[in-house]
Amino acid sequence: MPTPLSSFRLYDLSLDQLSAKDKLLINTINAHCYNLAQGDPEYLHALRSSDVLLPDGISIVLAIRWLTGKKLRKIAGDDLFRWEMERMDAMGGKVFFLGSSERILLMIQKKVAKEYPHIKLKTYSPPFKPLFTIEDNLEMVTAINAFIPDVLFVGMTAPKQEKWSYANLNELKAHHICCIGAVFDFYAGTIKRAPAWIIRIGFEWFYRLIKEPRRLWRRYLVGNTKFSFAVIKEFLNQRHGMS
Image: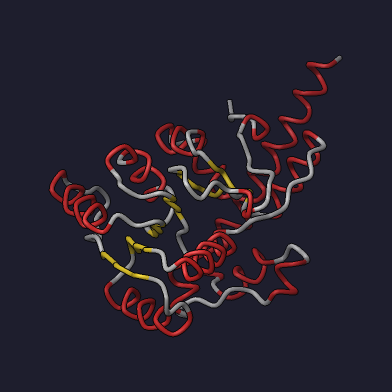
């Protein structure tokens, strides 16, 4: 039985209303994440344990409006990234990038130095493996805590990044811990995000599908259909419960 989408505590405020002082675990959810979580209890728990869960996907926004009448605004991982970076640049804050390859991280370092010159920056590229060892985790946590960042960006793709961040949350000395996946590649320029007008009309998913059809066709064509059926089933269950 799928976990009802309406049971997730989705963030319905603006990013400017996020607490700058509190330690926050910030995740995003889209249709793909929702589908993955149905077959992964650990991932589901990590998402539901988020301090802030951003509605990153037009399908999530429309589904919640249909199910609950609540009007959410889509906030993508890239939106969170830009907001945090501008905030950190203004205050001369510290930002840590955990994830991706040394090549991507070097590209990010060079770009940040030009666009956000007041940010203090550190990066760490973890080993590419399905599961980290205790030693791997210790090295990552130690590197982060030696820097004590205001913002920690974790980019290991879902669900790995969310599960890692939740599992290590109590050990991490960071204020905002943001799981933002593909944003590392967006910012480095290795993957191009859709133009603003495409994002605005809710077709970013289609743009990404056209750009990477072999990698993403199952996620969007099969996954979106699966998500739609789950939402319809939830709607019908609500109606049946009310009758």
